[in-house]
Length: 103
Image (cartoon, rainbow, N blue to C red; front, side, top):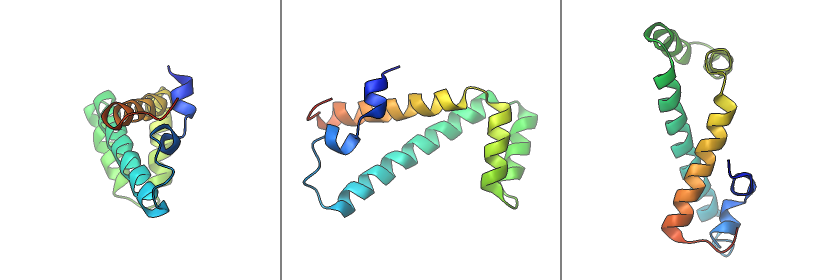
């Protein structure tokens, strides 16, 4: 795992500090959305059909965020590692696409 890339500030890594804050925020939000979608796909791949049904019910229920986090913690033991992998992946993709100021 690329710990240096994981800890790197992507705005600095891409040399985007001069951009207006609104654009930097928009970029970070876009990357966060991509990471969340990828994580959801990976979670669903690991769950049994029964667990998928239960997870979907949780997502549609009351206190969904808290309940979903607890469910994932119990059903996907490597979730923290998955998060790190996806963050590294999106950073690598952004650097490959837009270039790197430094890392």
